[in-house]
Image 1 (cartoon, rainbow, N blue to C red):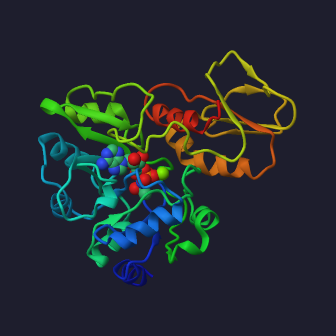
Image 2: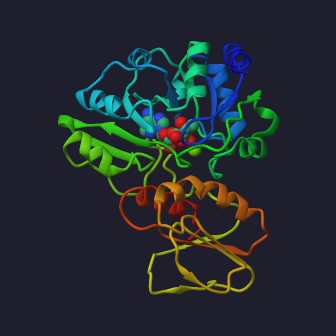
Length: 317
Ligand code: TXA
Ligand code: MG
């Protein structure tokens, strides 16, 4: 199967590949026509650049002109793993991959199949999450098939993904600083422990096109029903905020009544478990013909930040 997938990549096809975070829609990052097919299949605007996946450091070095100390430290600590590093781009990939930006996003995924696919295809792979643009990211192969169907040439099904939310995206900045562009599966605390300094945050929203992280659109990861987000309070008994059938989704255990369905992602308060179940549960709830979803925030700190980022972007108000 991996050999067939590698051959598909080499002839410019699209392969849905498992990673430790979510399924990616992969194509040869050096082939502009193959990359164009990714944008088409996802319905993704071309101003939103793609992450390039590599299987070893030498392949990463080939994509960028610079390898600052912070990149070295972070790659050493977290690759292969759910960390994407934004670096000045070299000229080995087409403009379409980076949406014309002077930088390229690089990551080495911690999944044997993904690493083996890159190795066998012998190409860096451009791969966004394998969902329709703006929809919830896929954590199972059937989510990919449901969203993208026949526009994918081959789907590698390795079962549910381990992390369940996307990689953390960072950009080395001035004087050894590191800017956090997207919270993700590597927590801020872990980054800071390795760097020995605080990470920085990009200037506040609203973000516009053509800035450092054009894909960080305010509304994203959204289920197809209205979703509202509220804070976490152990004293509160949560109730549906409107008429009709409502669903509740909460990373931790909360008190509630009156919901048609209530999903507590981790009754024990384990946010790694909650992250793993988040997108699959959102997809399950959107299939249930509910009138709306009430999302309760995760506790602050650790993976709570990344989970809350996804819930906020999925919320309609
Ligand atoms: O875990 C992940 O990162 C998954 C798996 C498949 O690797 N991929 C993923 O890709 O989440 P995608 O395309 O759904 O999200 C990538 C984000 C987008 O928001 C994009 O705008 C941003 O990375 N990005 C890509 N290149 C960039 C660059 N040069 N500068 C700033 N942001 C960039
Ligand atoms: Mg995505």
